[in-house]
Image 1 (cartoon, each protein chain N blue to C red):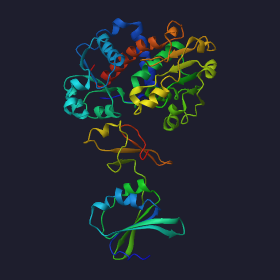
Image 2 (image 1 turned 135 degrees about the horizontal axis):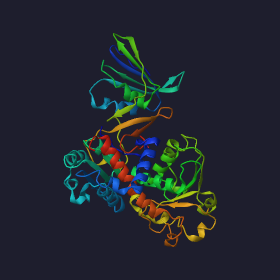
Image 3 (image 1 turned 180 degrees about the vertical axis):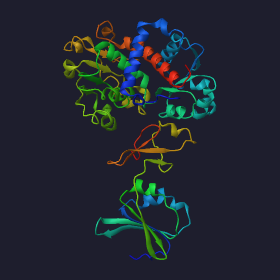
Image 4 (image 1 turned 60 degrees about the vertical axis):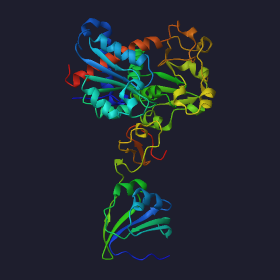
Length: 308
Length: 139
């Protein structure tokens, strides 16, 4: 049966674990998966600038033996002529076996999924959801810690508009004995509805602070985010808040030796390049892990749709 | 203040004071030529003040809209001057094209053909959220 993934919560905790198991098997046995999607086509519909997510999906499909057909910008597609998302989804369903879509409007992936006859993966819909980034985050946490429980997780930066943060909170709140430290300027705190739907719903302990260094010693995971210019209507607000947190080697002095530093990338200046060689920096591993999880997800959805 | 009793029609009573006009508009009564009375800030033993809407026509009323605006309101059907039925109202699980998403980033802001659908996400807090972008209604 055709199924789409719009939100990380479309996948149960058990399904996440199965995807992680598949990704680990792909890492261990890439040849086993090199032709599983022979003659299958992934359509990447990216109506908003993206480098890593589009390339990650495309690399994932190629490594499964499949092909990729692509729309790389809104200006080069029928959307520029005024075609609706629904019509685009119906049309592309005639050409491809699965769609990965990024769109600046929130809810666009939902509309596509309900009009396409093939599975749709949300590759980011405005500031709303970005489930495959969360899959990358989860595999990284798993590979670094070998557990999803008993962790103190610091999330830092733009916690208001940061869709990856919201998805991570939703996903990790389902596991036992975790604790969150929410580090942000006052103006960019986690919205109350996100806390209500995740942390409060599962009685997960959390603290809110503006002080990254004070929070550092207790963290097992530090998830840094960028203050995103494209989420602000007011340039002044963006300029005022963009440099709120910059992670430097000095700020890591009191951090645990086995801290894992994650970032959904791209970074601007919120993590100093001096940290890139620190063994605790996991953000480029996270990019690679994203590809493996996208491979696992494509396989799962194509299998469920009866395409494989 | 006296408003004549209606013979055949609908009386929406126990509306929280101040919500009568909102309900009038969302029920699209302003788009009809029916005789409608909106009575605001009526003294009420139970509520202190309340609003009442009287519709002088036996028309079908959208209970979902009433329940969304004010789940405490009561709906009375009047025939030949007598109360013949009290309709139970309950907050609907979804509202379609009753209220509209105000999030400028929502897909409904650019795709005019889409229905504006809101889902009840928190019954206790009476929170509805946009089906597409999850923005809170009225937020």
